[in-house]
Image 1 (cartoon, helix red, strand yellow):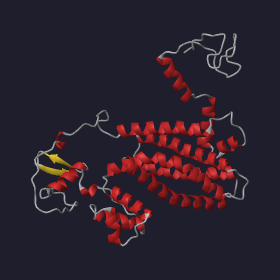
Image 2 (cartoon, one colour; image 1 turned 90 degrees about the vertical axis):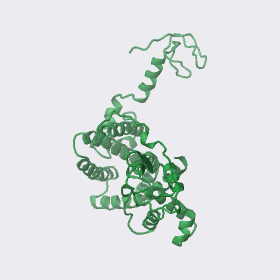
Image 3 (cartoon, one colour; image 1 turned 120 degrees about the horizontal axis):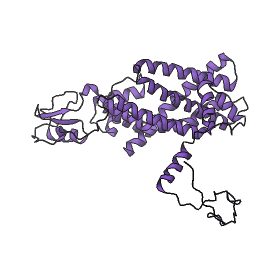
Image 4 (tube, rainbow, N blue to C red; image 1 turned 45 degrees about the horizontal axis):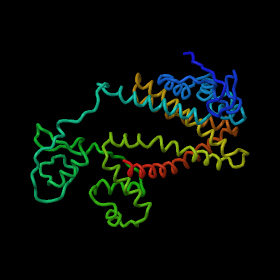
Length: 358
């Protein structure tokens, strides 16, 4: 759509005389006194955000098909040719969020439905029972005391079933998040949290004989929170935090690469650009994987994506840093090992913040 132009003799921004010039010679603002309507404002905002000029397409090719090439060209100074790394990352993040949202709806049989309050959630009469203990792994709630039922209602773990005329779990307790964390502090805390869901964090640490440190409190509180989640809640929990984790993770990737390639004359900012481009490529391929998932089974696509992205990162390191295959394989393994440890710390920290927010 052609933009309407109404020129003035003086710049509306800084007051400099402009004459018949298209732009102010002092501040560079467009010489246009036309008052934009609401649609023009929206159009300008969208055009500025999604300005898919030739630079976008020139960036997309090497990013997807020639791992490491885009970073090498950008760090060599060819910056006017390509989209800025951070802007490209933001655009791909928006695409990924949109694709994920569509995927969530398409996985539902009635994708057009909107989640509504369930009539079964209407409160019913509660009877006061003696005793105050509860085994949460027994589905029958008939003998649960009133205070326990109130607590479970507050956490939305149970609902009123009008047919059975009693409260039932929204999901069977066996459907709660259940996975093994191997050996060590995470496994011990998760196992204890599963067996003692109503024990306060302070008391749990005392009963386990653990020191009352910030780290122990942080780990156990998150293990307890996760152990009480259903599968759907856990997926939602990760979804709320995954983008935050990835955004904060990029500087760590760059720092790890700086250490691994400390003897090469490469600035930290160049490693940072490499990390952004790799993460952007992972997002771009994730968008493609989601769309392909609408046609093919998820397990196959997930396996191909995981293997393909590992190969992509390896080839990007090989092409950009220009070291031998054997040495690159070694550094690839070291980088992933280091980032695995860092990722656990990041997940715990971000999860802790989410505990306060959510």
